[in-house]
Structure formats: C-alpha cells, structure tokens
Length: 497
Image (cartoon, rainbow, N blue to C red; front, side, top):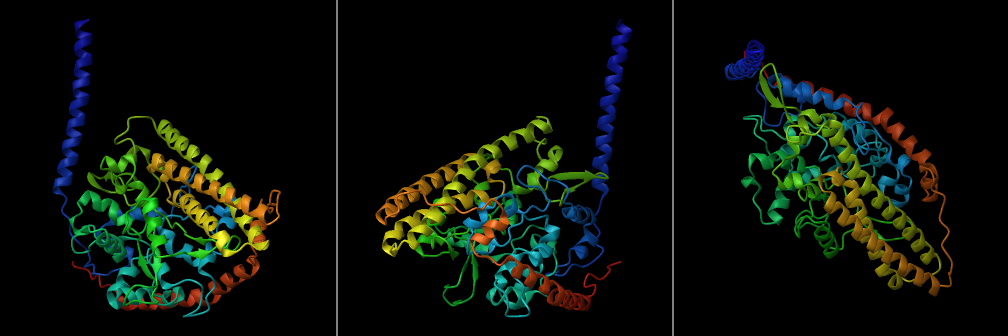
C-alpha cells in the first residue's frame, strides 16, 4: 500500500516539475528574444503590411479580422442586413441614410470595402458629388491621420466624401493606435482630445490601461458634425457631445441647447438625433469598466506563441474567444458564459423592440396629425417627446454590446424611452381627437424591408443603380490612383539589414 502511495506521489511530483520546467524554458525564451526591426516605419505610414514587417505576430492576427464565419445572437463578424431583419428600422430612419442601407459592420479589414459598398455613401461620379461629407472617412483608415498631418484637421473634414476617395484606401490598422517610434498607444483622432478638453480633462494623463480603451473610444462613440464652430464655419467638424457629460441625458441636453438635429423625420417631421455607436459611453457605466477592465482585455486578449506573449489583434467578439477573453477571470464553462450573455441580451431586446413598436406608431400618428391640419405649435411638445424617445432607443441599440457591457444602464435608458414614447402617443391621441379623428390610425404594411422602403418613398432601384455605376466607373480610378501614389512612397520602410 505504501509503495502505491509513493508511486502516485512520485508521478504527481514529476508532472509538476515538468510543468515548472516548461514554464522556465518559456520564460527564458522570452527573455532571450530581442526585437530587431527589419524596416524603418515612418511617422504617418498607413500601410499595415509595412508595420507587419516588424510585428509579424500582431499583423498575422490582425489579418484574421477578415474572418466572417462567427455569428452570435446579436453580432459577430458576419454581414447582416439589419433592415431585412427588422423592417421597422426603415420607418424609424425615414428621411435619413440608414433607411436605405444598414448592414452590421464586419471586421476592421473590411472598413474601406464596406463604406464603398454602402448605399448611404451614394453613387458619386467625381469630386464634389455625393450625399456625404469627407468627415465620414474619419474612423475608417490610418490614411486619415496621415492626411490630417499633411493638410490640417479642418481641411480633412472639408469637402465631400468622394473628394478623398483615392487617398483613403488602407483599412483600420496599426497607425490608428500606435506610435511607430516606440509602439506606445496614441490618440490619432483630434475629436477625442477635444472632447476631453471640453470636459476639463487632460487625456495625456491617461494610464496605459486606460489607453487600452481610449484608442477604441476614438471611433466607438457618439458624435456629430458641427458646421458652426468659430473659425470653421461651414466645415462639418467632428465633435463628441461630452461637454455636459456622457450619459444619455447629458448628450441630449447638449444637443437640445444648441438646437441640433441630424435630420428631419420624413413622416412625423420630428427633429431627430441619430445615435452613432456610443459603445464607449455605455461601456464606462458597466461593471467591467468599474473593475478596471479595458476594451482590449476582452476584445484583444494576450496570447502566447513560441514563448512570446503579445496582444491578439484579431479584434472580435469575446464570445468567439472565451478561453482567452473570458476565462482568464471567469472560471465558468464557455457554454455557461455564453448563456449568461445571451440571457442579458434577450431581456434587453424584449423591451427595446417594444419601444420600437411605440415609436413607429408615434411617427405614423404624427404624420396623420399633420395631414389633418395640425399646427406647429400643437405638434411641438409631441415631436420633442418623439425625438427624446427615439434618441434613447437608438442610444441603446446602436451602442453595440450595451446590453452586455452595461445591462442595468441600458435597461434604464430603454425604460425612459418607453415612458417618453407613451407620453407622445397620449398627446397625439388627444390632438387627433381634437382634429376629428376618433379612431386608431391605420398602420402601413411594413412587414418587409421592401414594403417599408416603398412606404417612405425610397426609389431603391435608382439608388442601387447609382451605386453600381460608381463601383464600375469611379471606384477603379480611385484604386488605380492610390496604387500609383503608394508605389511612389516605395519602401520608406527600407531594409535596415
């Protein structure tokens, strides 16, 4: 019996010693590794493959952002037509570009391709043409900080989207977040720095851990284009509305004070706000942020290969990488962790869809009130309620991951939206009765994306034809010009061997 016990103890000891030896060998390998740059990366080098010469592991993992195979309950990397899945969105965005086309974004590798293909950018035929300003490029490419450095910030924002098509061709990557001289994280989008200044904060005081979220906050935030900035009048200057704070009510107050609206709703004529993607604002209200967890900890967790530890630049949903992203802290099985996430998302979605229904009805009922001769004075309070209710709906819907990042805050915001939408409809019912309409307003058939787009008067065949003409005629010229320009750049990353 003693021999058996001794044998088992010996086996366990040998196993543990083996693990210790393996760990020591790996640590020694890391210690021996000495970074030797192969190329000299210039200050505003936008080409990710050039950075990849010096940082092959990070670059190879970044290339995986082109993988579109993972799909979760509410996201993933696969292309999804949000208007097809939920035609009510067409009515909610009537009069705005998102009623034409609203696809869930794919990985960073597709940032340029997807904006080329979007119907929201129209079918420009040349410089000075098209519906969108140049500012719409801001979060799409490391060519942006290059152009801002070369020409100035306001000059970059000036003009049309089509004006800079041949200049912005490299998808989101290395230069957006890193200083090439030392690879430290850096802020390359001035709007974030300016937003901190507006709040009386110094972004230069941010810790490294905070920077692992702030580099994401350069783009995954709420923003608007301010054409009235002193000295920059007429330029659609990118601004984050954080002067009053980051909460949904704070930004609403900011917008109301300056009487800003993104568009006027085509059916209800309400002055609307479009929440872009306030991911950072909702993230900071959640428990992970409160515990000091950064965006990168979950979306870009560390990994080891060949004894070398590095940040995984396959930026993706943590649900596709629970071993590194979640189980570094949580000991539950992956199936349990995913079930927890889906449960929070499902419960949040239930109320968000209820709010959508109320908003669609409110827009249609407001349209009926105008049709029956309502005055602007009679409609003013109603349209404000609709504006505020939809702002809360959009804030919770567009801030991707909010129902997981901050389920309590998201529930609070949706609850406020339900309250305001209900108030709008009560006021509408009274007004419609005063106007002689004492029965429910007939709702349009919006059971499909196509029917909803027909209801709001979109000529989708024309829009699609314009886009195809753009892709056949102008887009190839952009790519050809960009290729020639980058060929002249040559290997500024000249071999240092």
